[in-house]
Image: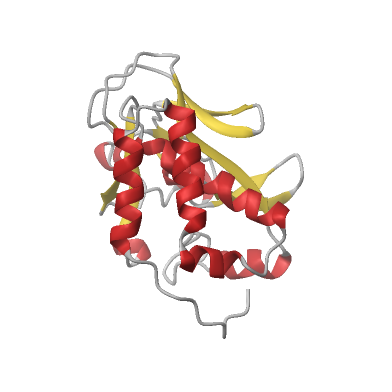
Length: 221
């Protein structure tokens, strides 16, 4: 993407209209999402943005957009919300995933999808910028290390907003070509959906971890 290329602005109300039609649609969940994606692609600003890209790249963009539109399904069980838990470390408000319905153990949260994007060495170096006070802590928690491929990837989609907790209530697993989450125990309405990033993600033995469990137990950062 050419950083000097000026993009036209998208009217927020146009986006809200797409979401409202999606929520009120009687087409069924999949067809409603497909229609919402088509409406998004038809917006002049989006059409202008996608103009230089190949059809394969446009299809990938549409798939990515559909994952977010799926969150607006009235029958869904999660929502994206703000959290200030990490603000003093990252310098900004962060996002989290909250349950909007009670969830039993073993439930697959089908609308909480994600995928991995390969990072070049330059991209990984930029995203690996560390906290000034703790040199082994990433600022960007969307970077995931693949032990199998021995390289880092960028976690994309709504699933990227699932935060770490040392006593996580969900586990990450692959569902076909997507990555999603399955509940490990009962989750209440309003409870945050959490996963375990690994024992050394926040420094050795996660000594700089900021999760709620570490706070309650008087450890971590």
